[in-house]
Image (spheres, rainbow over the protein chains, first blue to last red):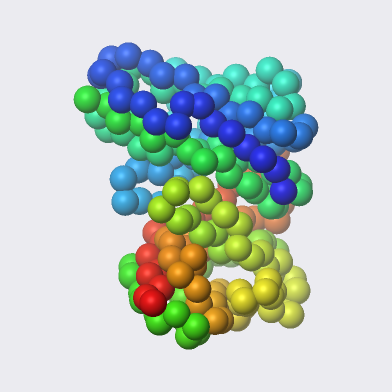
Length: 114
Length: 118
């Protein structure tokens, strides 16, 4: 397994602003993933972030809205840009610590947009 | 595209008893992985158990076991000797074995909220 931390754990933001969420892992991992969990809903993959390459986005998610950085093998950031109330969700990062077929999740960031 | 269906939005069980959570999925893939994740009120997603589709033997992890029926595309989770700490949202999830490129997408069901009563 892996120990994963996220910052901030929660935030309340005004519409039109941006928030950057950090994900830190205690070991080097090739693959990191960002998921969104809207209120009362399941998790949806936003993008896959591999070190040294551009993030791969799922249908319905675009880089301009959710830019991702992956500067090294233990860290990634997800930015939620130009936020609206519809972006209020829990954002979770996960890593393929035992290989990509075994993903472990961070504690999540609860975002509320007013 | 793959879909995962959990038909039980909520369930409850008495402490020390056994409960089974249902999950069905739809895929045209022959090789894949299936997972059960647990999300307690703290919202930390915890991997409970994993099953590889090519393995006929059902996965077991302490009090947690699965009933994997590949032909029926069914993947249920049995929790034995339920404990208060098992109270959580349980998500069933699917992943293709070879997703290609850098995409190892987990597709989740909508979840089952399990409450263990004292």
